[in-house]
Length: 267
Ligand code: MLT
Image (tube, rainbow, N blue to C red; front, top):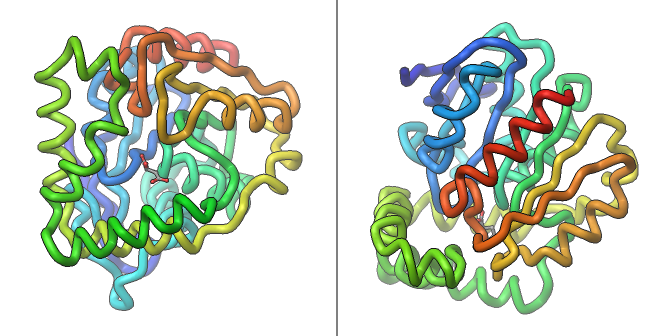
């Protein structure tokens, strides 16, 4: 069921809210929508209340704020406003890649609302010079040629070699999902990621159960980055998902869901 909730400054976050039990919020990556989590909604809703918003600017939450900016802090505050609207005090907060950057910003800004954390295919560090250059080029591409061109440029690095070889239908599905995101949102999100803080110093403050997951073929946020995070988060659990690239929840949903379910049960 799709619902709407007021974001903190009057916007609307569309979201799915299914199941009952411990609330579990899952935040999608760039340039994707809440449909990244379709398999997890189905698999985990017997055990928890699964809430999957379209982050501001994406999917059915397409409207941008008046200043057009999409910072990780703004997304985090939107998620807090969503919890308020749903009368949820504390939840397991999780995110993939950009959703992971938002999850870390949420921890920094709203940690009293966090029951546990899930960080999938993401990193804590700020952009390297090479990543900054790539983002600036992608901003130019989005402005000049639009969303489909960005989807075409991004799809190969987003999915692992195994998926690209064996799952052509999934490749098309993800490319189509990416192409639903407007060029304006892509530009704002890329600028927001460029401007994000280095979250590494915050990792030592995490004192809630934390699950880290990464595909062994992830070319965007490789396993070694997540191992470094794992070492800095006391008591965290790291699961490496075999035969998966950057989008592990859709590339290997059974393995991803099993690890997530194990974690949720333990929490
Ligand atoms: C994502 O999947 O959210 C992006 O690849 C993150 C990024 O570009 O840093």
